[in-house]
Image 1 (tube, rainbow, N blue to C red):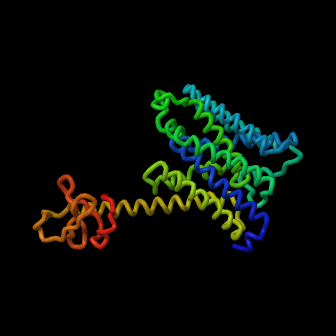
Image 2 (tube, rainbow, N blue to C red):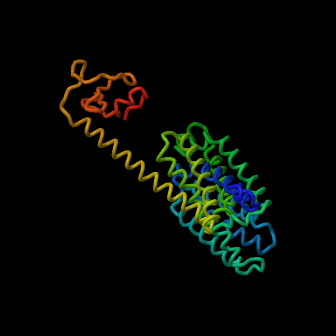
Image 3 (spheres, one colour):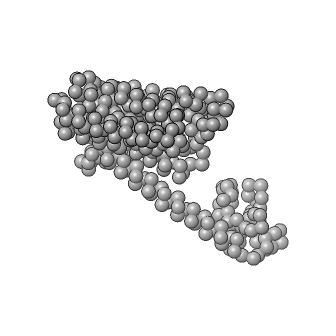
Length: 332
């Protein structure tokens, strides 16, 4: 690790990955809640057109991409707010037109090359400069600060727009702000995971967190931790394995999601099986049934052949092994 940190470009890469890992899941959690998981992909297509214009005109590609992505975000939200049947078609035209324009303009730009196009589409984290880190840092701090300040309003609007509107919240305003923050995240992550992969880093950590957490706050915390783990871990793996950083980061996020899905599904199956075993016997537990009574969370469990059984609505629940009685495990 000390050898890696001794390399300037790796320090830049790890810092940029950390910033993206923090900011992308924070915005993505609200996109998942609003069932707009793939909106980052569409904004990435339009941002590519901004990159192309920047390369063609000699302007800063990152700033040009930021302007294009923000304009697209505002247009997307206004089209969605209209709720017309043609909204999906309008968005498709914008997204596909954006990536097509980007490819054509980049091909005509003297400052571009196939390598440049690949860097923006799939990321080129290991070529991140100090100036890139400063820009990414400023944008990421803005996203994190705005999301944390407005998270309760975003949550209310994302959960139930009609109720939020009836409660007096300016729904369209907060939707527009969230759309702009999404556009900023797309640009922040452009050089790290690429415009075609950024949506994965906004969505997959949140999808994994939802399997683990039992509250919205916990979901956000888990998602940020998973995002940082995948982005920083992906950079380290890509350096050692000589693989593209963007693809490595996303594959790590996919692998973590699949592993968590399998683990949680297995644990749920074990709980259901334990519950079925507890329900299946005809023995009636009580003060004189001959089984050891164990006080637990306001009720009494009975040690039945190494299992703790508790009466619940005409059947018995399985509450774990009696050795764990002092730990106060919640009822399942």
